[in-house]
Length: 373
Ligand code: COA
Image 1: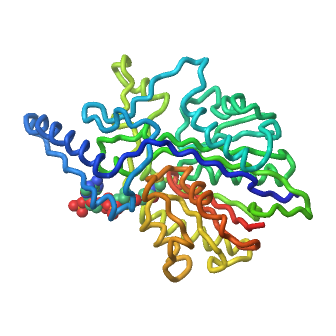
Image 2: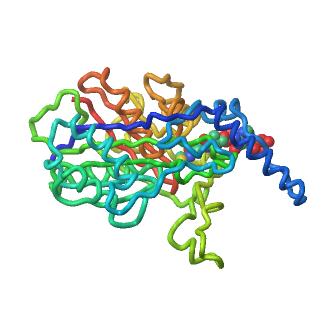
């Protein structure tokens, strides 16, 4: 078995951002119009959204988005991302390449030294050709490529796959790419979810090292694992069968088929599952939660992360121990925990342990135990 390190981490965050106030203003303008229609139709009115609620309930203050144009327009409420011809790099591959190039530079290698690309994200732009193969082609990496997906745990699940493939000697260097364009699939007319998500792309290079080798500043992966349990509480029904389920096939209906979530159930059930998973996973590795210098957790909800760690450790932890990036980025799905890792590791000492752990739709949880070289 080979020893495995994360040799490169890369993050791409779009320049454009939207504050809670902007988002709420556009939502409430749409609600006013919609409620006039509902009143005339004798239907129940919709309730308005509220910035204070958003910060209190989730911790999110703003989010970065790939394309601002269209999202705040009450007549549209979706980003305007023009279709591209097939011979142009697709939007999601381009976003993936942006973080992948940074991860490859961080690893100090050439793209050709990578022998597998895994594109793992909560939403893939299309089923085929695999986004990972388009990214492989754009970067000029060797070997092969495939896509996979596990909701917000997509990067953690890909790390589980990559770690074990490199460890077993099947591949020498694997690039994991998680380009998350959630705004393309978010229902900005849904009060429950319109404020939660943002866009970001994150990549990791995972590679084998020699038995006696040390790579100062890099993290050795000491183990990975995943956990899943079926739940409908975070669900999208958008897929290739949507058209076949409609009488009128001239327009594919997105409304009702985008992300929906029973947030408070997810909060309770995933908090319980994640804290148990963290404690059990570390125990299987012969370690205790108290021995972790840092926790890079999924960035969905600040209160949820605080509660998971309080239950796992028996006391509260500060942001130095469990950094949060969601206040400024929102929930960036699989990219979130990787961004927390990228932005919060340079101060760690050689020998420090850290836990990377993501959770989300499925339900799913994925984790990696890391040790600083
Ligand atoms: N503005 C104002 N009020 C709102 C609102 C909004 N945008 N959205 C919901 N509310 C209201 C609800 O209607 C409800 O009102 P009621 O008490 O009168 O019925 C109240 O706020 C509480 O709603 P609830 O859904 O219970 O809120 P919450 O405290 O659970 O927070 C989330 C909502 C989504 C922020 C939270 O549940 C969450 O983050 N869950 C976990 C998400 C997650 O981890 N997902 C996995 C990864 S993708």
